[in-house]
Image (cartoon, rainbow, N blue to C red; front, side, top):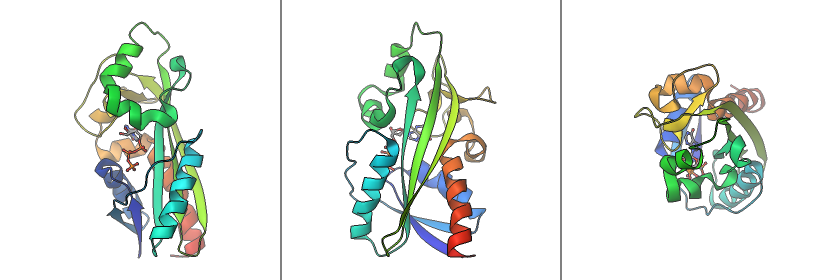
Length: 188
Ligand code: ITT
């Protein structure tokens, strides 16, 4: 059994990762380190910079991830600014921006970095396409979950249990990639 840290201040993310990685025999502990998110053009760049910062502070293997919602009609906004935009205008603000918009396609993406005390950093990504709902629905999840409907379902992420969201989500895809690689490279 392996134990790694998941560096995040977001409990919802942690619970999703914990549930999924359990199935691979990988235990996670939440670590809420004070890492300031750098500005960068892609989620991969952001997470790589964060992982380098974390490497300086930790002597244990860890994962850290950065996620974002990319809306087609808004040219990919809020994308790398998802956190700031959520704090400022929330789901309601996004719904207002899309009030007259027919093409509501959007995707969620996660870039996940695994870091080891020896300095190795490896990046994994996951993406789920879907659309923005016309109103908020559901009480589960966090962030933009009440307004995102993944392709293949009629429910928003906030209407799903953690297990159901893990069948679809960007995060779950990145975590599965990571877990397969980890078990192969670090051993069972
Ligand atoms: P960290 O401590 O891990 O950075 P965070 O909540 O700041 O937690 P991100 O920067 O990765 O996480 O997320 C950017 C925004 O997107 C933030 O407002 C999240 O709530 C939202 N978000 C990320 N993943 C999401 C998901 O699976 N469902 C809904 N919203 C999500």
